[in-house]
Amino acid sequence: MERIELFFDSWEFFRDAALGSGIAGALLGALGVYILLGRLVFMSVTTAQVSSAGVALSFWLPALTGTAAVAHEHAGHVHCNVAEHAESPVISALLSPAVFSILFTISVMALANVAMRRSRSPEAVLAVLYLSGAAATVLIGTQIVHEIQDVQQLLIGNAVLVAHEDFIGLGVISALMLAMFSFGHRGFEAAAFWPQTASVAGIPVGVLNMVRLIALTVAIAYTTRVMGALPVFAFSCLPALAARAFSPNLRVMFFAALGIGACAGMLGYLAAFVFDLPVGPVQTGVALVFVFISVFISSAIKRIKEEEAIS
Amino acid sequence: MREVCLKCMQLTFGHTAALTSPLDWEVKPGEFWAVSGPNGCGKTTLMRTVLGFLDPVSGTFERTESCAYVAQLADELLDAPARVSDVIRIGLDRRRTWFLPFYRYRKRASVDEVLSAFELEALKDRAFQEISPGERQRVLMAQAAVSAPELIVLDEAASAMDPLHASKSYEKMAEAVVACGTAVVAITHHLDAVGDAATHVLRFDQGKITQIAVKKGAK
Image 1 (tube, rainbow over the protein chains, first blue to last red):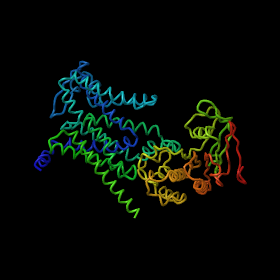
Image 2: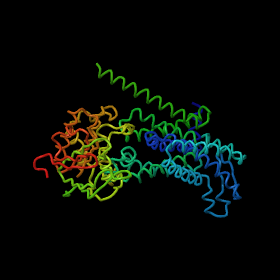
Image 3: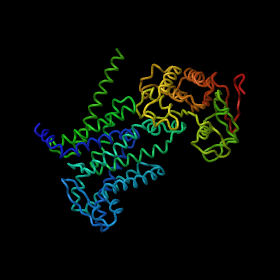
Image 4: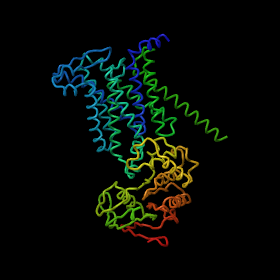
């Protein structure tokens, strides 16, 4: 109780991180519906891994290119303050960790998409990418000795605080994407799960599927930069899995996964503070608890209904 | 309402080379065509060509934009959670109407009408994944009919049904939409199943296609 009181007494200090966790959980939970049902789980973990490599690369590139980068620690969160020191504002913007990791991830995943369409084994392309991303992150880590511990903390999801500009960015991206998927859910559903029917009806299936994949890539890349790879992968699969157990249709599943993701993000952050544990693994654990509870309750209800039908 | 829903002019089709001799074919409103022939003769390839999934080898075709399609039942349809009524609602959206959060009342009413026409009221709230394959095909037929398009293409849409239910479903399709001027083209291996519903037959046989009017008054 004491720790909980302390948490809310220091709300100003933890607000951005706690709410940011909830927002990221809501965004990834809702989009996770398309990841889970579209059989893109392996793609999700690969995107997070590529994004991790992008984050590590964004810390290494300034040193490599000779750009005067100043990495400074700010309350446990790492910022590479390139913008203030780079000669060209365009280069400085492109080299900022957030922008760089998103552009890097989108470019790599776009190339992967082309390769997957041409390959007889699309999963092999993802396997190559995943392993390349994992190896690159470790290898680049050896080149950025001073920052690697903070980068690793960030990627595992142990960052205690979220910078205010990241929180604002997360809020804007989440609001835009959730609005787009809420209003256009019928189109995205038809394009994703009924492509032939939708195509004959004149619905722009190709455009909608491309928008969906870009949105998933941007969401995973940005949240990996802010939250870390582990909770991002957990939020992009587990809330949807929990919602799938009891949702009668895709619309209910979308909003249920959104709510479960938001709760897992915020409760996980609170639990990590109360029990003094790393944030990312605790958020993953809380999301898993939601899965077990919803699977248990929905199978119990199903059994009761079956028994009622028999009697 | 158009005078012709589908018109093929010297059309040949196939994945690499033409599978049949050139086809001249017109499907008019209110006609119910049964397309029949052995496996691999090109029935599905013809339909995929006129629906725009494949390019023709030669010749041209014109098709109404108001069209619905029932593909052979695929397992991936079972991944997304959906009630029977949700699956039918998928058929309501055309072109840009999907970017509206709610359906208009008239559209919602047409779901109830088609549920009634295809005798699916009892299954309305059941999960699509939990009903039998034959019932699923009946639901997909209702999905195609719900927006009252000018042309409906059915690709072995009754293959999982027993002959009695297949025949009944085709008759219901004829009653529900053909009477309103919709044209139906149904690929089937069993002409008997189409029963009295068909007004015409397009028969594929060793690279040749013959067209037969099977009902009095049909031209």
